[in-house]
Length: 349
Image 1 (cartoon, one colour):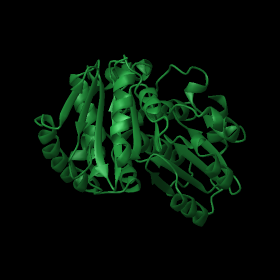
Image 2 (cartoon, rainbow, N blue to C red; image 1 turned 180 degrees about the vertical axis):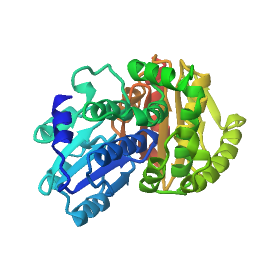
Image 3 (cartoon, rainbow, N blue to C red; image 1 turned 90 degrees about the vertical axis):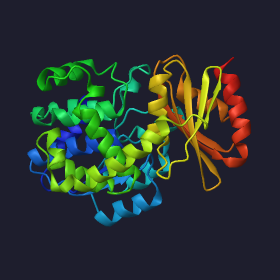
Image 4 (cartoon, rainbow, N blue to C red; image 1 turned 30 degrees about the vertical axis):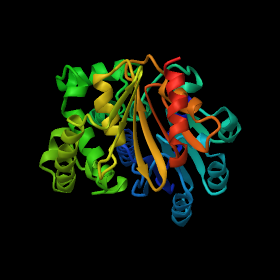
């Protein structure tokens, strides 16, 4: 962690810094935490770019237009995009805080940048980017006023097992027994709703959350009124998912569910179903533009979701990755039957 902390400590008021983050609950919370650190140090942190899972050409073009000298990636598996690293490091110094499974083939691409991922030291550990960012920022400034943001990000990522120190700190300070049944989970759901409905961009959500002193303030903040409306809409959709059984198929340890929500909500549906079927691999799929998009969960840890999706993708034009407990994949609609058959064999062997 020393290398990434040194990078953060080297940022000066004169620097032009861009924060590029995954626009989910963990990535957004991490961005707010980092933004608050920079503001404590008098550094302008207005340049924000939300990205969904990966960095595309449009993001690269935006970065160039800002002419930064330092770029920080949060919750993005940028090591799996060596061409992006090679392009952007021509213009700025790069730093990455991430927790996704590492791509061995791309290890050389991160050698010359500041890269922090706990999986480098222990491939079995699972810590959210919010957890990592809070710890890194706390090495440089007192971040206790933003502990609740770390809580929102941690609970957004579900797996709390290797974040016990901060989880206990949160419980003690805020008097909660279970983060997954607290105001932090509600704020996480509000963020997810805003992203799913496209009510606000990731950048707008970061700025809105940065205005709050405590998580309870979200209910009264004028900056968050659109987020609350989105939350109400998504709760209606979730009720439909919870009562929908006709689109669910059980194949031994594999549980398949087709999401037909107009908002997508694959990851939300996967979380809901997996909470009730912790020992199964829950795969929620939806059709989009002749593609199958998948969110998979195994909250009991008995099946490696990321590895199962990768193995089922062998021989197909597909992409798959993520974590042991939560993963995703995209493949052609024409390959769905083959993928499903291969996944069934892998899970139930």
